[in-house]
Length: 146
Image (cartoon, rainbow, N blue to C red):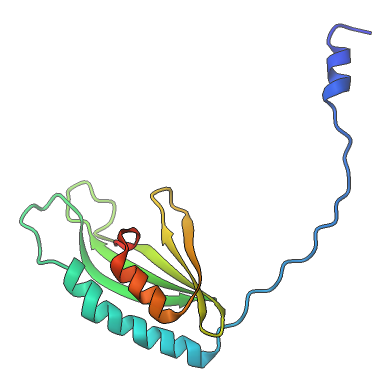
């Protein structure tokens, strides 16, 4: 037995087969729910978010600023997005988009609400809310700032 062989014996683990059940499929969003969510959230964006966050063109041309706020569906997720203008001389592109809030369809009139963290990952903070509660939380909580 060479030096170090006994150490390898104790650290080596045997491989074990484990059962992993299949994932539950995500529920499909009915077209009526899609259109209702889109209609109410677009009204919210036009009446609350755009007046609050879209400001006139700043005098200082170095910093990014919001030019548009919009929404879109992707699978069973509804996103709130902001479009920024990047006028500086070192800008990679003149415009870029970020997502700042996500409503996930769970079941009839039940949604999960998440925000985009500074780490680039979605962080779910509410589960099982109605659409009205989601809109109120996006309006009132500082997590959902574009």
